[in-house]
Length: 317
Image 1 (cartoon, rainbow, N blue to C red):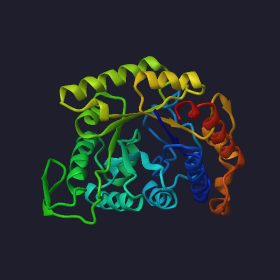
Image 2 (cartoon, rainbow, N blue to C red):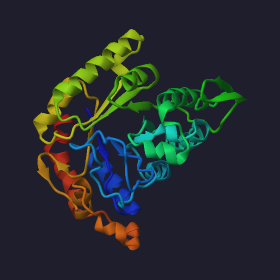
Image 3 (cartoon, rainbow, N blue to C red):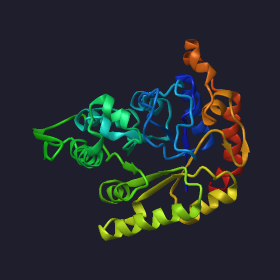
């Protein structure tokens, strides 16, 4: 099982560079950023990863655009896999996105992967002029378009949403960019098994639920003639903290455990901004523009990574 660091809590973009370098030195396998887009004052959608269905973070906290930051992280690291977890795919036109992905893949020396999801918030679709009701179809066609265009060959596509005559987009990556589909509903699982190289699940507190999802994905892959041994299962279970918790994930078939900096093998070590964001409090640093330019990561965050590497990761090395 691999261990990938998910970092949604940085106030400073420069903090991400420190964390990525430290993660690589400690033996983490990957580094991921999520996609914050913009934060609505009022949200009508149900947030699926909180107990009450509401956002559990400070809406004024900074979220950096992942396809801007991640390629830069690829340039300063040598081994880390760099990926999005997840990018809200239907909000981007796939022809324009393909250019960004190809560039990112080359900058990361073919260590870039794209994790995608559909978003839980109708306002993100309404405010950007994308049809919320068509998001599933947009997801499917976008994945198909990306596969074609990232090949670097002359391709054309004729779908319900996207339609274009032969075109080519270069430079193209030397290796296929792995696509990972997030989402827990039946359509998302089918889409992952049909069109992607793996699946991303988030905040599964109960191993039984995760086990059912993995079993369904395996059945769907086998029905489609997919090689299950190469299919990736990424999981970020909110309840996992101890070595035994991660051993259970490995036994369930998780190939990639997503971990957050505050999770230190059962002992919580959180920087102030991390704590504020995770409990839904105001991230005080976000009110200070100078905080976005701070050059160092909080010591508590680095200590948490070190403890996690020592108490959990070393048992897989």
